[in-house]
Image 1 (tube, rainbow, N blue to C red):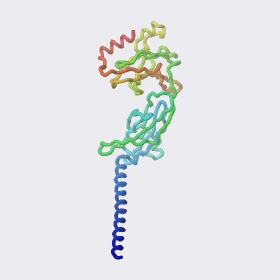
Image 2 (cartoon, rainbow, N blue to C red):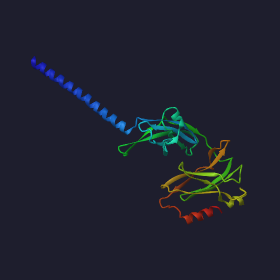
Image 3 (cartoon, rainbow, N blue to C red):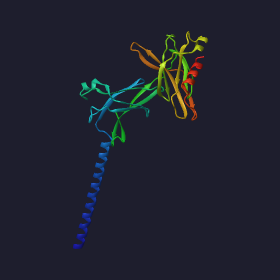
Image 4 (cartoon, rainbow, N blue to C red):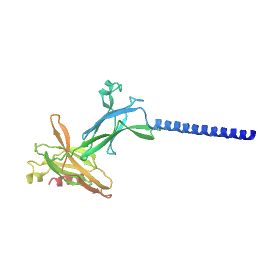
Length: 281
């Protein structure tokens, strides 16, 4: 009888020991996990996306653990990276509401050219840990959904993209209301902004065809270095309207697709000059 009680007592102690050990292991794992989380993800980021539309995405973000440090903000639209910038734009409103002691915590992104329809903007704060070896993204506020409408160049402008390839993108544009003006045109390749310039290159063919009264309506962009494969070029004309001079990008005709081959290289300055001259004839 005594032996049975002794065996039962040992079994109870073993069970108790195993239970205590299991709880201890769980707590240790939880502490390690919490420590990693606090290291990799900053719990002190605080911010908001105020607005997102076809022209901009703006808001603010603060690192409360280091309020004097500019937080790196990254914009993603429809799950694709667009741009990264420090959140250091003036936001006096967050000082007025006592959210921060200084106003340099705002971000302002220019929205890239987008297809007509619904889109989703997400802004992330970048947190570095492990002496800069690890970078994690933390969502600022919540995803912001917005709708863009298609903005064709016509009837405000007349124009065409004549050609797009691995070396250049060229065409012409005329302001229907002010034919003598030289509108600003912007080149996007694969939906990413490349360059902006005035459409003032000579196009004597437009005069010969009686499309324009003078020849200074052409544009010529040098195509940047691109990876091998298919790409899409879009040229937009900037349309300023209203008393506040709102700037709207209007697509010139339609997107132009082209192929970049591995053997293709960038043209020399002399070749580019000759190509530009030929395009104006």
